[in-house]
Length: 117
Image (cartoon, rainbow, N blue to C red; front, side, top):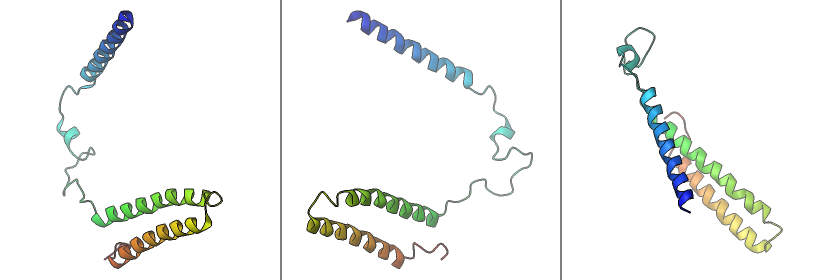
C-alpha cells in the first residue's frame, strides 16, 4: 500500500514538473508590436478590430438549439409507441407538441424569426 502511494506521488510530481517545464518553454520571449496588433499584414487598422456581436444572430442560434434538442426529445416518444398505453402516449405527445408550437408562435409574434428588422 505504501509502495503504491509512493509511486502515485512520484507520477504526480513528474507530471507537474513536465507541465511546468512546458509552460516555461512555450512562453514568448518578447512582445512584438506587430504581433500584438489585430492585423499582421503590415498596415494599421482604420477601425476597431472587434465587430459587435449581433444579438439577433444569438437569438436565432438559441432557437436552433432549442428545436435541435426538441428532436432529441421526440425520438424516444416515437420509440415508446408500442410499449405504452396508446391513450397516455397520445396525451403526452400532444402536450409536448403543443408546448413547442406555443413557443414557436411566441417567437413568431416577437419577430425573432425575421432575420432583418
